[in-house]
Amino acid sequence: MMICLALVVSEQVMASGFQVLLQGNRQTAMGNVGVSLTPDAYSLFFNPGALGMMNHNQVSVGFNPIFSNNVFYNSEVPFSTYTARTDNPMGTPFHFYGVWGPEDSGLKFGLGIYTPYGSGVRWGDDWLGANQLREISLQAIFFQPTVSYQLADWISVGGGFVVAAGGVNLQRSLPLDGTDVDPMVELDGGASGFGYNVGVMLKAGEKWNFGINYRSRVDMEVEGGDAIFTVPAAASALFPAGNTFDASLPLPSNFTFGATYLASDKFEISAEANFVGWSAYDTLGFDFETNTAALEDSNSPRNYENSWVFKIGGEYKVSDKIALRAGAYYDQTPVQAGFMTPETPDSDRLGLTAGLGFNLSESFSIDVSFLYIDGKERTQTESEAIQAGTYNPDTGTADVVLGTYELNALIPGISLNYKF
Image 1 (spheres, rainbow, N blue to C red):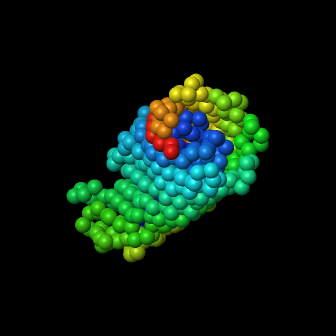
Image 2: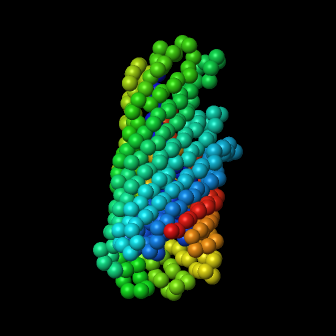
Image 3: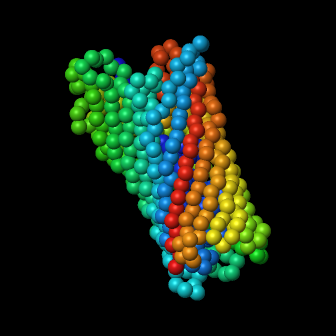
């Protein structure tokens, strides 16, 4: 029997597809807007062009513990009451930004270390989709050295080079008979890639800021990852020990534009649109070093579509010490009907956000955020999967699990800031 394995790395909590929207807790609290906000160290990610307009230097560090829940209902089987829930490990994406420039100069230098893709999903080994996925985890850390310069009072530009490093671990059951072992495969490997982040900030008088940001696609390459098979002795020759694999995952480009209205010294409101180039993720190639009659290389269709994220948020300074923040965003799924896998049982999502900023002194401040994500319930039907070519009812082969999926998540966050 031929067994084709697909490697999919995913983050399905914070944003559609496997993109994480947690790069700064001031911005997270404001609906994740950031491209045109009054600049701070977080702008290194959201719009490096804005850094040249900062009137201070800053170091910021923070993280966001993720508590997520995925639910599966076997809705495609009449009268079925079967339900499966994930037992996801707590995700901990983090960020660090340091921005410095000479006094009375529009030149700023910076370094950002952040995790735009990460966390994991754990369905367990006894749910009906275990042959598709037991659990998966992805870690991707971006390192971004950056430079920005204010060309004039009304315009600043900047950019940074991105070096990405990370790893993936995937576990799934194998459809093999055997009583001596639990047949499964574990795929584990490191990944790396390169990209860039550029932006422009424009000021139109005292009341308006406009921002444009482009973050490039990053192709994460896995080379020489470990393919570890646990199989009955009779099948060991078909799944050789010491096998390795290569794979590639495109992390999508992002183009964001937005505007901020500075109503007063105390209040600003911002709105933006984010175009995500998910169409780069059309297929997933998986190449084993050693092939056998039961283990061949594969190219699995994903056929993601480009999508949009729409955001709005605001900040009100109650006093010199406290700022109130709130916002919301709507995130379109890039996953087409018939292509939902247990790694990315994706749907359109609504994010509701709130938070506070505390100025403890002229130099020290704390940003606190809270994000609730509600993923729209979505059913993957047999007819959708057949049309997509991901399910064959005659042979029973499937790249997907038919049924209904739900997602929700609670994500607090905290950042510490030092200005100098």
